[in-house]
Length: 152
Image (cartoon, rainbow, N blue to C red; front, top):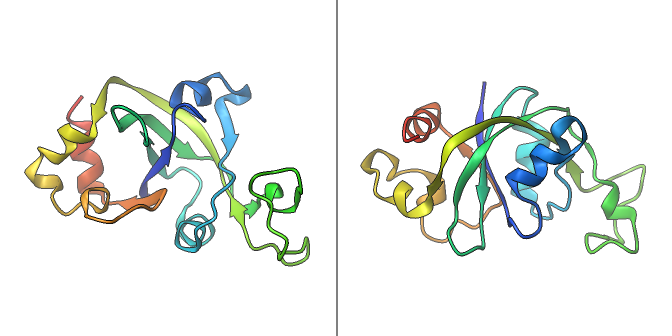
């Protein structure tokens, strides 16, 4: 099993929103970064666990646990001219952007803030905490995942 951190702005789509969705599942669309796309396409597997991270908000941090619940498939927003994620270059025969479905897995007893994560010496090497790392999807080691789970 692999572990991941996926960022979402809570005023756009929050962990609470995921929990309210039908079947508590949502396509993770709109990713337009090649490295993040490659993680979804090549590395994420059904059942992998995800630290659902609220970003670009007053208090960023881990809001809950989700899981990968589908194999990768084309992101339909790339073909929708009305979508903010429209891309004129890909074709339906050769899609450029893919997504996976993400499902609610578990609530945490409490929110774990970025500041609290930064205070954990064992997480000093975590990609999230490295300067300049702005990817919306990041791999997390099993050790990092367990340290964060043990904070609650």
